[in-house]
Every structure is written in C-alpha cells, then in structure tokens.
Amino acid sequence: MAETNFIHAAIEKDIADNKYPEREIRTRFPPEPNGYLHIGHAKSICLNFGTAEKYGGKCNLRFDDTNPVKEDTEYVDSIEADVRWLGFEWAGIYFASDYFDKMYECAERLIMNGKAYVDDLSAEEIKAHRGTLTEAGKESPCRSRAPEENLRLFREMRAGSYADGEKVLRAKIDMTSPNINMRDPVLYRIARVSHHNTGDDWLIYPMYDYAHPIEDAIEGISHSICTLEFEDHRPLYDWVLAELEWPMAPRQIEFARLNLTDTVMSKRYLKALVDNGDVDGWDDPRMPTIAGLRRRGYTPEALRDFCERIGVSKSNSTVDIALLEHCVREDLKPKVESRNVVENPIKVVISNYPEDACEYVEIENNKENASMGTRLVPFSGELYIDGADFMEIPEKKYFRLFPGNEVRFKGAYFVKCEEVIKDGAGNITELRCVYDPETKSGSGQETRKVKGTIHWVDAKTAVKIKVRSYGHLMIDEANGESVLNPDSLMERVAFAEPAIAAANPGERFQFFRHGYYVMDEKITSENERVFNEIVSLKSSWK
Image 1 (cartoon, rainbow, N blue to C red):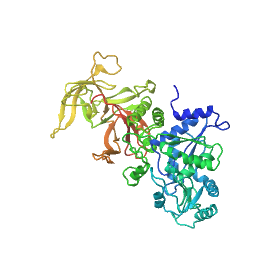
Image 2 (image 1 turned 135 degrees about the vertical axis):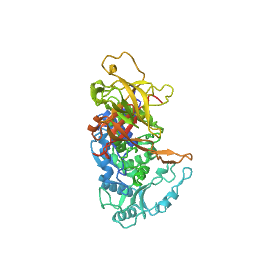
Image 3 (image 1 turned 45 degrees about the horizontal axis):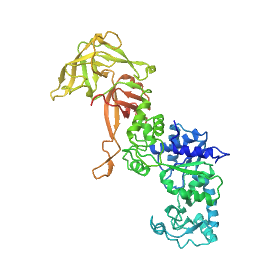
Image 4 (image 1 turned 60 degrees about the vertical axis):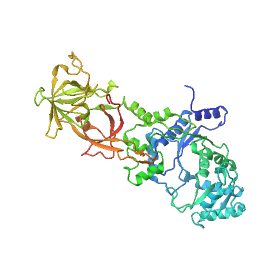
C-alpha cells in the first residue's frame, strides 16, 4: 500500500534529505505520571514505538515529572506495565527530573544572554498583561532588569529566599507576538513540594514547555511526536533550542489525539471518579484506562489493530467505539474456547430420557477454529436453558423453543416442548419435553431438520457464576450535561457447564450466543467466580 501516514512521510523525507547522517531515528513516549494511561495514550504509544520500529530506530520511555504536586510512583509503575502489556519495550527509561541540573544550567545561560528575566508579577497579573488574540500584551516592569540582577534573584529563588508564587523566571521573547505562547512565557516557578524522584532537592521546577525540548535534545530524539494542542507551542519549542544553540535539534510533529464516542478521555475527570469512589479504582472495567480495558478482557493485539486502523491525522475527529469493539471481536473469534452459560434459567425435564441417566456429548471448543478441538459436556434428563430461548406465545420468526416446537439442543438431540408447568403465581417452573434419540449430533442418523438450535447446561452439574455487563460510564442528559450512568454496571447470576470450574483468572471465553467474557482477576474468589463481559455478540433474533 502507498504510505498514508503523514508523520512517516515527513520522516522519510528527512531521511532522503540526509538530515540525520550520523544517528538513527529516535522517538519517545513522554507521559506525565499523574494518573493511569487511557486508550488515547495507547494511540501515542503505538505511534511512537511503532515508528521507531519501522525505521530501525529506538524509542525511549520518559516520565515528564516536572509537576510534583500531582505525580506519584504508583503512576510510574502503572505506565511501565501498560507499555509492556501493549507489547513494546523501551530503549531507555528516563525522567525529566534526571535533567534538572542541566535545565537549571540552561536557564542561567538564557539569563546571562538577556533572554530570560525574573518577574515579581503574580500569576493573575501575568495573565492580565498577556493580552488577547486581538490585543498585544504589556511588558512587565521587571523586564528591563540587568542580567546580573536576574541571575542573583534566580539563584535566590532556588535557595528558598521567596515564597511560592512570589517570583517566576520568564523568557524574554515578544509581548506583541500573535502567538500568545511566545509572550514571555514562564520558564520556572517556585514550589515547595517534595518530588517523587528528587525528594526535597529542588524548590523551583521548570515548566513543561521549557523542559520538554531540552529533554528531547539531551536524549538525541530525532522526531518529537506530539498531539495537536502542542502545535501552537512549537515556536517556543524551537526558540528554546535555538537560543541554547543546540546542535541537530529535534523536529516536533503534531497529530490529532484520539476521541471516542461515549468515552471520557479526560485524565483529570477520570481521577475524580476514582477519588470520589464512583468506580472501583483506575482498573474498573468501565474505565477507558489501559488497566481497565485489560481487566475487562481486551487484548493488546486488538488495541494495536485498532490504533493501526484509525491511523493518524492532522484534524480532530471522533472515532465510533463500535470500531474498537469490532477489533476486539475479530481478535478473540479464533482464539478463545466456547462455553455454555445460561441466564434467567428455565428448567427442562425430558420425560422420555432414561431416569437418572447421564451421558457426555461432544461439542467443538471453537467453531471458527477446528484445531482447538472438542470437549465433553454432560447431558441428562434435567437441564437448564436460557430464559431468552423460550416464549410461551412466540413472535413471528421466533425459531427457538415454544409449546409444540422442536429445536436442536446444541451438540445433543432434537427436543420438543409439550407442556409448560407454572406455580400458583403464574411463573414458569419447568418445561416438560421429549427428545428424539435418533437425532444425536454427529451420529449421521438425522433424517430431518429443525430451524432452531439452543444451548443448555446439565442441571445437576451446572456451576453457579456471577456475570457482569457494562453500559457507558457517562450518559448525556437532555440539557447536554454528562452524568454518571446508573446502569453502567449490571450484575446477574448465571449457570455454566462444569468445565468453567477449571477456568483461571484472566482466562477468556465465548459464552455461546451471549458474548465474550473474562474471569475477573481482582474480585474472583474460591467462593465466587466473576466474569466480565468483554464485548457482546450480535443476536440472531431481535
């Protein structure tokens, strides 16, 4: 296929122009460790690591830990686990804080070159001086300070002579620039906060827009791939490296971030859901975090396929979550074994089946993949069928079980419903049926056909399990406001064939005609087997 990835096209042009004659293509994935990664980050992971892999280069994992107020080692560990789970390995692991000494040295150089100054204005005053998109900003009264005085004040900031917010270091660029990001942006601020990596060594911390280009340059990054909101920040990225006269400066390229229908993609909002107890942690299966998707049963192969299919773009758009679910189904279809599981069970008594007898019928483990073999499932005169597979008064084109109708019990026999037994309240307690012993699956003796096939479990050996299915975490109200969906988690009891008792946490199955499920690794216990719905199947009848 012709190359359609504009980032790869740009890299190939750089290679053709011999822009990097003595070094390899090197990228980086630079998350801030202030929360768990979500599926939007998966796109960036696949793009950065995949790009390096494509051109025989390397990709670094770097933690942009310049804001110690929100960062924690828990998030560092989770990010490492997510990247590895997706199937990638970094060339090196780094922290922005590894370069604090170098960044401070660079800041002093900018000060002495007259390109940075210490400002006494408060954050509110700086914002008021910045101007608007149609009005130029105003210069700070501190802008004309001599380099020597700025250097003294900056060193005093580092030494702890001033309170948080009392002074900042700003770049001296152009307060009339049409790009507001170039109107003397803040480079350093005072923050008396202990850092997860450097402890209490620093009382001042660099701003992201200043730290990021220096980090990339130190690591020899050739292409700094960012999301689209950093496009307006690129002139500042280039300005920092140009003023520091950095040789072979990295090239920043921006792409549109991933937006999914019916999916919350704000890390700040997701953190609030966790902190408020609205969800069961960052790995709640309803969360769009990589940890949540992993616990729900999504596979890394499906996520990588999804990221490959949506590609990269320069314009923002929203991808239908149905595409992600399609990728999951396509990945699981040839991989997982099937199990019979019934919900809202209805008891079936086969009156002409030998009393107290039980046999084993052979059922394929995966109808899409014959190499996965078969299994033996117990069959007797007392069975459970799924509540959705019986109608006392059938609707048009309903080919499952109803009074007088005959269907195949999957892998077993033709069974015909003859009588519906109810209690005093009118609830169905059992179905009296008969079977045709000449119609066993695979016997070669079938001389007639039926339209419907349903699944079942043996009543005496069935295993009780808990099944969880999920709706969207957030829903939109009539006024357009998004609120928590009260039906985002639905739990119910089901009965499974006995083979389910041997399942291990994290193991995936197709529950025949229901969907794909995974045994929950977090809350499954010896006393209760819990299965999360990964993705549903399309019903054969609606």
